Length: 203
Image (cartoon, rainbow, N blue to C red):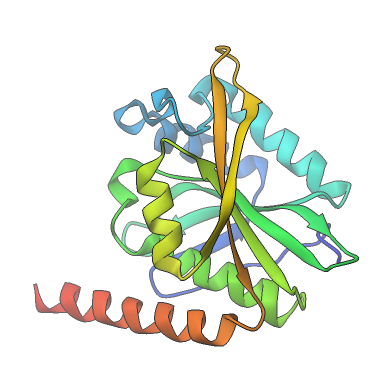
């Protein structure tokens, strides 16, 4: 499973562009929107640390351990966040969609759902994954609901899975989608996105 080379994934609501240092300025603005970086239960880089975080992700990609994208909104043309393939397991093969965040104004717009559809299609239909995993903080109820809405099933909770920079212990909720479940998940996502776009046009 080669994650060292990326390509653009294009939808109608979002375009996932291979992450580069050229995205740093817009990513800083997206993270600073309503001080999103202060959200304690998710890891959004501080604007001043954004260049370093982008460089770190690109370094991980060069070593085949990560495949990062910047999320560009079609409606505004602006970069609104990042999303990434992480923890690849070539022998299974499987990976995790994680290290994802979106600016406040992009949440609830269908952008995240379409981004996940693009990534899942790539993972299952091009990388031939047999499972795709999602992980989130136990207290991030918004994220847990969004992952469930994708059609992922909860595998379990890893208690005291990690300790944050502030010393707080994190319980991690693990979800996954299997390759045998992908056709139904894909149909569900396509249907919900079509309904969302129809509702938007009707407004």
